[in-house]
Image 1 (tube, rainbow, N blue to C red):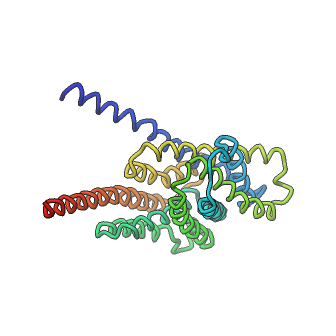
Image 2: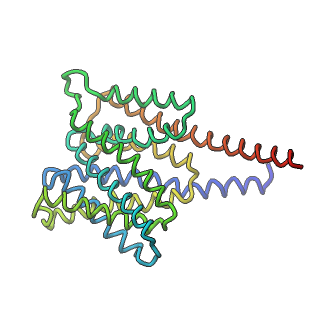
Image 3: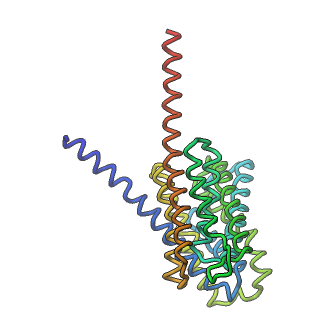
Length: 312
């Protein structure tokens, strides 16, 4: 191995270390922030906590990015609005699910949204394996008896609705892909705040103005929105899509661990097995989807070369 090759490998490793750590940090911050947010439910409910998270996150990101500095067309503004409204619905439904579900279980169910989207868009034989893993995990999570580990059906419904919103969030986020990242994120959260604040105020009322709760809400906004979204932006710009998808698949397991450590939530062996099944499905789908794209691109290049040769 030459010195140039060695240096190239070291540079490649160094170039992926920071974004990898950024993504892991984003997931850890989100899981810890969400665990902390759940402790506010008795005071302001899931709706009020969602308002804290989104509104405070929006204020922080708008102050940081100052989105008015960048031009914005009416068409792109509409795309950002869709992105923001979907983001608000996703967070609200997810927090509603957290009222009765353990954190790791809720994240695992919600994760089926982007997983299903990836499988639908891919349409390859191996994807049925990932579908089977995800379905097996969901079946294991669904309560079948009267044990203490039974899950609330309403919570499951909220988590599944949040999964649908997560898939739509990805679609609308890609639609706004030509907008500056900081502008899209900050204005998207502003649009989300316009949805979440009235809902939170209607439920929690004047309790949202309690100085102690506002201070806690600032912590939720930073840990659950401002910090993870900013760290994810670093990772998205520098990590390959395959690596990003595989690493992101760790989130349900990290959420389960955060629930155990922060909230003293304990899962059954069956629920841990279910979460592992969904993690495997998500990681496998992300890995094989990227390989499929590379093969398709290679085949397309081959067709172009064959066409050029025929013309010659």
